[in-house]
Image (cartoon, rainbow, N blue to C red; front, side, top):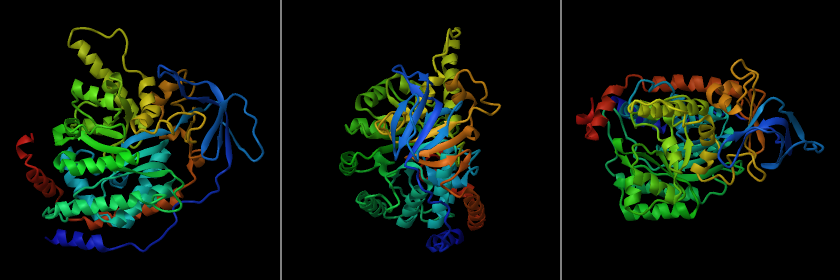
Length: 503
């Protein structure tokens, strides 16, 4: 009980330190990107890269055409030789977890729960969460991700949640903050959950409804980039009528509603939603592993989005990533990182792993019939689509983001082709998918604001934030020193009656 009491005391301590990690730089009224190779998908979702100018006025793309004349006071960026891409869209990420990166590099899903989600995360104070969230959003921006569907189940206190939202605003990212009611433990070593789960769940829902009344969400510094969504796990274990009311409310507000869907691990959202006729075109199913043909048909018919996180799915034994099968069935399909505490935090890695995994899967099916492929079915264009416009479709925001079109939000990434990895690439789509890395992300613009320029973060003061993150991690490591993570995992497995399934 020593660790349990120390953890309880840790929750009550608030940090009073205040440091400004972000810079309130003036946003230019207009930006002209001149002469870059602009990624535009044709009607068959094939990537083209015509040389065009792109004019951003305020938060909006106002012109995409050759030889735009710059107005006075327009900031002109020479994009000659660069790839001008829509910002990458991450359709499933737990931002608050990235600060604990490398802690579950060799762990299964159950160990991840025991070591991280129902473990180290519980030691976060509100100020720790702010730093973790800000560092994670900064990582995403550094990697060219401009929009994140943030599945946030850091349900320790209202203060923790408000700090998550504040950090997202301060980072400059575009984010749908999916508030996720969740029953985290009250103590570890021994592991103890609330003995009043219904009351806890209702308090969390009450907070969700209060957040829904905030306009803008969080504080007045939110210029519309941070909006509210709903993350709803354990849907199959909750009263159906209560769930219907909540989902109807979220749907009426056009909030994206996201669920974990991996029935091997007891998360059977698709099955429950189908059986109760609750599927809707505001929903996003994360992982969606081991789907039946009927599942694919239902998802397509109702316009549900699919988020595949191939790197984490393969480690956590969710099953084969289903991004390509979902796309082949006509479903809205995007990619996600899941958690950069588990794996890499960029969509270049996700695209590459997703593509080559599917090629191996397709080739293996042919080999099982003693055949060899005449051509590859999974292409770089398709997976690049998933990371951009496909991702926007999957989170139901394709009218606003995901492509470089007049009237859409000014979320743009400039990719350098100067590195030894990218130089003289004849196929820009292949270069982005198979050869690019975060170091090739030269500039990032979100909502018309330049947040990374010439390889350097300009919204966030990275050298200062870096020091704070390093200092904070040392403090966190001291706070959980002596915790037996193996015991915590074993108690969790026993509580979930999963011991007999392990091998």
